Image 1: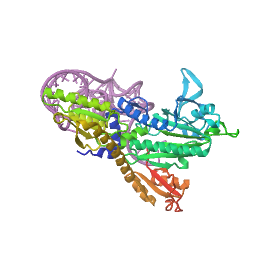
Image 2: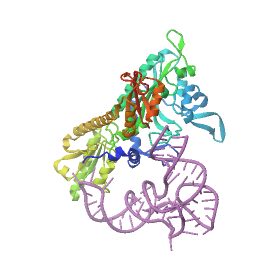
Image 3: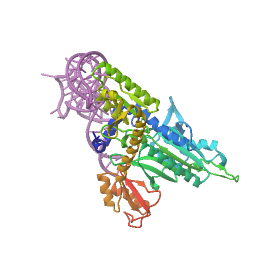
Image 4: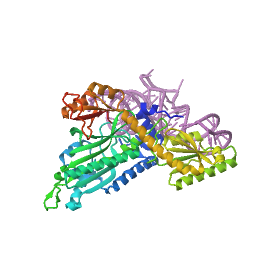
Length: 480
RNA sequence: GGGGCCGUCGUCUAGCCUGGACUAAGAUGCUAGGCUUGGGCCCUAGUGAUCGCGGGUUCAAAUCCCGCCGGCCCCA
């Protein structure tokens, strides 16, 4: 029984909304504030596992976790002028305390560059204290004016992992951006999420950055989604806040900074990319439940009792082997109903235990992704499950990458891009002279957004707008 | 930024255009019981909505009008 991906691919938006609510992951649109969602227990666990993963990757590369206040005073937020301009329209303001009008408005942080830079200026005074790498995982607020969408465009990003680093030189900060790119690559690889790394164009870099490197993936409907960014902030913030560090030669200078972030969108992507018409398929690397055990009832009570005991033993064997499993032993629902229930929750492996298994001392395993089943001897169960989980993990990533690569296409003329993006959707790459005028012209012509250019320039071909020799490729896509 | 659609038991949907017999219907879920159980089976009973919120029109509003809140879609 092969699971189709018809609904998943042809009506992704509906599929996604349904999965979030039916699998009890995220309740969106019912809490009476626009653009916010509620993480339900199962969704919270998925989110938690993803957070733990990034936390581990950051901790093991010398990042230190901190927690900054949610409130940022207006004057601080306004210190860096480019930065404010970029965010001004989407800041939530606290203007009252009780009955009193506040003298100084307080922003709900849209991101924390200024807040963190301010404290860094108090903490890090000498070059020997650098480099320094902080991160926090917090809620940030953005007053989105465009249509909000569950997890993908929200007003409260509940899972904003932002890292902030301080360095003595431009080069060292640039190296840090490279490390960030490596960490994120590893992170997305572990989640089986395919991505394209681009340098964002000048007109679309982070407000207050020297340059921005971004990770984009593709949703099933062919629209690109930004899932991670890393910014070289140069001395923009440290100069704006007049923050200097004493160097080895006893002179002082403004330090260089970087910042890089990921958000709830990663969770959305993990759920979305590996899905099919029965729901999501969670990669074993983050699935809250790896194995669900479903007993198939026997005809007589005596066998039934033995069978349940068998199932309980299997459950405890797995759990003590560190494989998180759940026994769905209730007799309220039929096995078939349970299959659908746990498939909607994306549990990677289903273990069926019925009279046949009891007789043969075996367990019947079914993979969530392919629905292929096989019978396994009881004493080979743990290694068999480990192996199957690893295979699922690998296959999910491979399938996602295959789908992704098929949809990243190079074109030499603008008409082809236009047709491609409006028909199938995906990411189109074209030769580009490097000028902003031509870049914006491309966006206008094909009615899509520029994602940026490869980090290693590809100068082949002629600019699709002006016909001059290309300096690099330009990537365009319909975006979220 | 522009345009359109929508909000009715926990969920999905009917009713709205053309106001009155709507005391708001059905499915699903949930609760209890029975029958089943290797892919959502069936039967019985029960539960459950002052029709998003506020105002207006009217003898009469789920239905018409205005405002707000929230959701979805299309275009820039």
